[in-house]
Image (cartoon, rainbow, N blue to C red; front, side):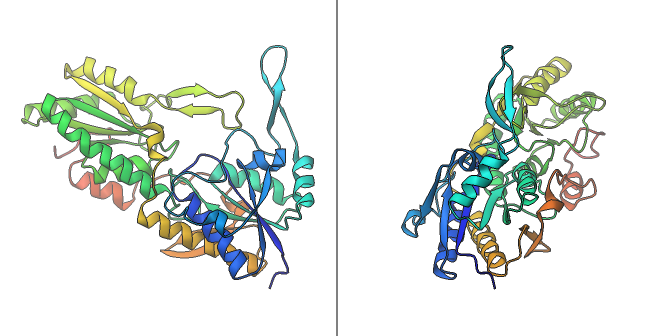
Length: 371
């Protein structure tokens, strides 16, 4: 058993539903079961860099289970080895390695193990601290569901529910105006969110990064539906979707972030192209950050609590540098280094794609046999 007396916890990267459930589970379990002190670190790695660290109590994490976001705050603009420290004469962001400062603050607050809650970017940054002797425990978070070696991440199911509700609402307005409606989801380079929300929302076309699409296939599919008397067509498109032989659509470059490329806007481009190719009225809706916000669903509250508790058990057993994960439906753990710098994409032979194709869903790669 470990002799640790003080732990820290931070939430890194983009926010998502369920973060507060993890903070609550980790903090209360470590205090009640193991008698540890728990330090909350503000705004992800930024809090470690800028020494914004405070003691957490059971009262501080009470009544936060149902809240979205994170009471600790988060950031995806800085890591210990990539901290924006100003601009040069040309206006370019200057980045510094401030690892020594981070290690100093960890020592100053007597933090013996750090629980990091985040996605692939956060886990990749964690490896850097592991190599500098910091004991870490990871908890997988992302609405994109793209972390390696875990079947699901908390926050994903709530995002699917949010996107599905939006698709449900768009069905009625699309039918009323006899339109093609595109719904753009988040997901970066993985199509899990678009795929699951598309299936749940009865989308006619689902476009994901793993399957490059052809405009002529999508246009012909929409025209075929009109010829068969269908009142509308719903297309769910992941922000990372790209045409065959083409590239992804970049919304913006954030120069002061270590994740500078932000995808988005593919639905707007496709709306113009489909309208021009078919003569059908087309509209697009980009769901954006509504997918990250709001109250976590019951599934994510339970999963986040289980993952948070599992993280505390790794601390109790002094099993450092591991990330809790879900494999074959059960909680387990894997080496953080095995997760870093990787993305779990949708396998082309997965059951979700097979089931969707079976009911006639078009993925834009070849004509569907059923409309």
